[in-house]
Length: 195
Image: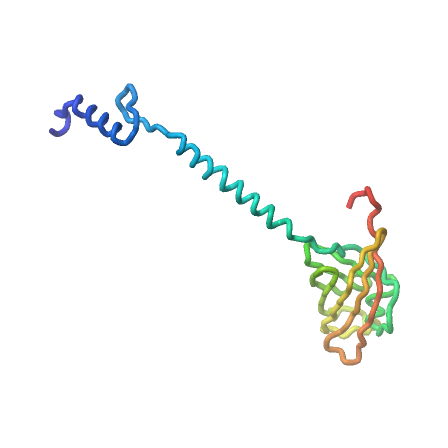
């Protein structure tokens, strides 16, 4: 039978038989309507709620072992210089200071008057390691070897009302430049006040 010659009762019987064999119920209009067993609901719940919840708990568990790096950001005032050369004295004494900004373990520091030299590096535990290039635009009285790499290595310590930095400043290619040790102090914010 083709087209409109099909027996409508035979077609409804065929649809009803199909619904009974698949476990579906037939609605009043004669079309198959799916039914969901409680097991299907449980599987769907576990799939859409249980797995994301388990993932979230796993991430939280892993995050418990992560430690934030020590905070070293701020303005440091150099309080002591050991046998400074001309350039080290220019970068670390007088009205100059050591200014550090921090994002996670990454640290950027500026040295000297008007932030003459920029250093970049990281803090690992309490050890600070920074390096940068001396720009050629420094005044001649600074005595700094233009284009040389300057390296700052230090240990950061924290006291209740201030921070300490004990470090060294060295030039990597300058044979006549000595490594200079220094100590610097950073004032911390008063408790109860914002950042």
